[in-house]
Image (cartoon, rainbow, N blue to C red; front, side):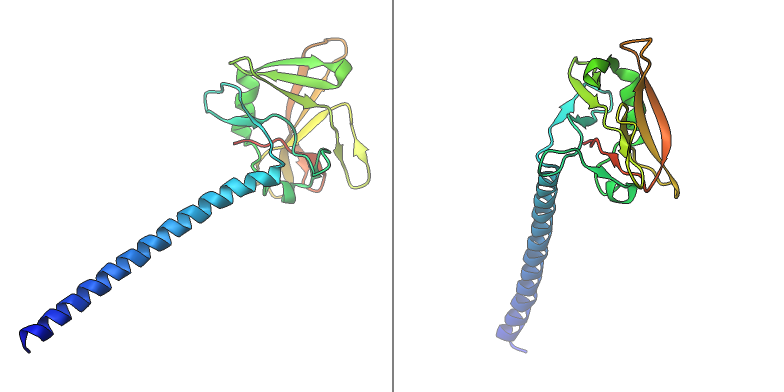
Length: 186
C-alpha cells in the first residue's frame, strides 16, 4: 500500500467515528428535548393546575385544588385511572398532616390546610361515587398512591359539629372501583 491508500483508510475510519459520535449525541439531545417537552405538555392535561409550596420539609408542592375537567368540575376517577396521575404518597399525606394546621370552615363545607410558611390549600367537601350514586357529600375524599391489589389508600376529611374548627383527618382504604377526586402533587 502506498501512503495515499494508508491516508485514505485512516481518514475514513476517523470520519466514521466522528459521524457516529455526532449522530449519537444528536439522538441523546433529541431524546432529552422530547422528554422535557412531554413533561411540560403533560401539565396541560391538568388544566393548568396551580401548585402551592406550603413550606414542607420534603419540598412537595400540592395542587391548589382538585383535578378538574375542561368544564371546571371536579373529576372523580376510579383508582386504576387515578394512578396515572401524580397522586400523593402515604408519606406525603402524613407530612401534610404533621406540618400543617387544619382549620374547618364547615359553614362553607371546606377545610383549610395552612402550611408552615402560611400558604393555604383548601379541601372542599366533595364526597365520592360508589357504583351507583354520590356518597357523603359533606366529607372530602382523595386517592393516595398505593400498590395493594383490592383496597387502595385514600383520605377522608370529616368534622365534628360539636368541635368546630377541628377536622378529622383519616387515612383509610377505599374500594378501587369507587370514584374519588384527585389532589395532585409535584
